Image (cartoon, rainbow, N blue to C red; front, side, top):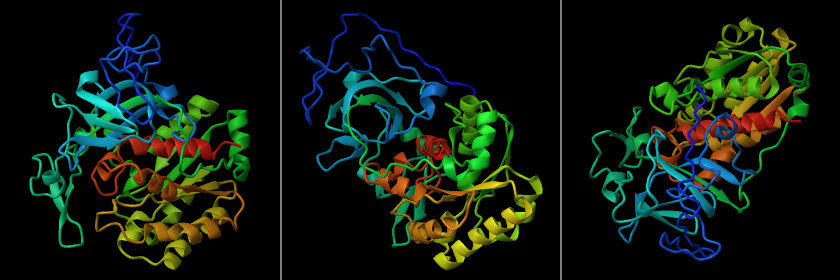
Length: 393
């Protein structure tokens, strides 16, 4: 992905300000002392979104870049959605492609909720849309396994309903803080410190092919797949050239990974391997015993044939809780952790807990590009930030 850098310069030092009391409403007409600048009155710092900002973690950073929202109809007829934190300053609110910025009079902030005003031009979903009584032209429907349907598309129908919010906050992450596990990957650490080249192999299901990052879909802002983003960040941060071989195939389960580990992984004599199965295993009711046994077989095969390789096993994100695909994915995490802990040179990327933490605040349209199980750009970036955190000592 080419670096995306967009900057809004200050319009004036005397720009109008917004006021906000704790948990209260942001009023764009107010000019009280201590007010919160809105996106249309850019501050001197402006809006910048490039390589330094793209993969900032969301559990430590006090600036959240392009958090995805999809305003949905509420019981009172308004359209609203939650941010992960309560903003102290809104920097920018943009459409999915990041090419259009919405004026501050198109929304208001109440606590951590963004609420559309009556004159807002932002995309939104009605209750009739969500219940599939009124299906948008850009989407289809999919059986939810409970006698009903949910909105679905592998195209751009869902993501074009998203808006991206960049803001500052003083809150504390209320989820699990991902663990730094660089000490579990000593050979990788040595290569990073020496700026040596790294052979990276990724093998898994459709999530690990990069579906459905905007770059994969061919639209702005052309977000890299997370394996590509991870490789690029290693080079940018550590200076190590990364040769990425991605043998992931959509629709596959862990037994396929087991059967093809020789050709899909060992053949390339990797320095680092990322194994990513579980979404389809869960949907097909593969038992946790069989799933973990398949991953364990892959680890043992890689270690026997590629003794210098180290491995990151990624637990799967969960599927949209309303979808028929949401079955046993979360049940794999505990036995997977236990098995991985038995090995040296193997680390666990816990995307299961991360996705569950996000779902406590965000609706499915804000995380899944197909509204079922493929990450949108925000979650794609979450994979990269989690991986970059994992390889730190």
